[in-house]
Amino acid sequence: MGAEDARSDLPEVGPMGMALDWSWLRGVKSEWGVAAKPSARGLTMMDIAVGSYGEIPDVAPLRTMAPRGSAIPEGVPDMGYLLNAKSDVWAQNVAELYEEAVARQWSATSAIPWAELQTLDPDVEHAMCQLCTLLTEVEMIAADLPAKWLWRVNHDFVEAKMFLGTQIMDEMRHTEVFRKRALANGGGLLKAGKGTEELLRTILQAKSFTQASALLHLLGEGFVLDIFRQGELISPTHVEKKMFRMAMQDEARHVAYGTMHLRQAVEADPDVAEEIHEALDVGEGVIAQLTMQPEVFTALAVLLAGGTANVEEKGFPLLQQLMAKMFTSYLARCERAGINRVERTLIPLEMMGIDRSQLAVA
Image (cartoon, rainbow, N blue to C red; front, top):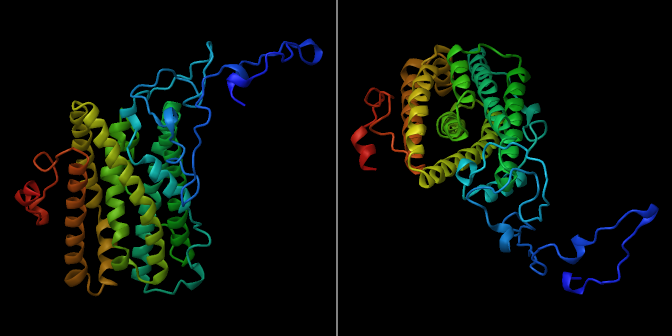
């Protein structure tokens, strides 16, 4: 029944003499008759973005938890949101990424064939446990950072809030799976790193969500994603391969969100680019220190070599290739985000065998 069909003889007084308000039935503005139609996947967030309900304001008019598109009465409390502009948090692909995230959740308890773990060469087991110690350490920042900012995001950008919620869950699962791997085969958790902690603090203390996103999604998670992509090379057995493959699909979503968010932020306000550059100037220096921690690069070299016997002839050359790939991918992500770091980067590209002029042309 539409508002125009509402009866005029509805009672004005209810039980115990309570005055009745029928305004929700008689006159609240809504798009009556505009129905969301399920797609082949079911009823997605994209499917319900119909009519005005799919219109995302450039600046949220209020700071309430009222659903976007609902009628909001006067006097509702101000929730004190700090991220009230679309460019503060939005990405064009955020609804699609949310749907992918909820469809591809997995269990670190049952999705990995833990019972099939094999006894490894002690040096290889130590290297895997050292890498898992590092990953357990760094994955938690990718949960803590969205959690820090989530409550500050205006509810009009609910799709972004929902996606960030899935990132928190993803990263908790990554911390779980790498902690389990470190403990499941007799090796245990090994050495945490000072440089690692410096990077995590830099990300967590970023002064804006956009700066934090640059440090987390472009730099930190981007580097971790490249490690996951090398899972076929660094995994001693199919168990680790499955672990890295499952984590990689999650990490790719986070990096895709951050890249598109930063691009949208820069397009909305070109001055934001300099703020991002300033954050990355600091972040690059910190992550360079992290990659030079002996417990980081030697563990990777041992895994790439399949043991310590061939670490010098095989492990270190493969590691140099991996590092060059990681930094080249990072610069490409920056370019896609509208941030050209090729000439500004503090990373010693030539030392890594990366041709800066070729990057500039690309």
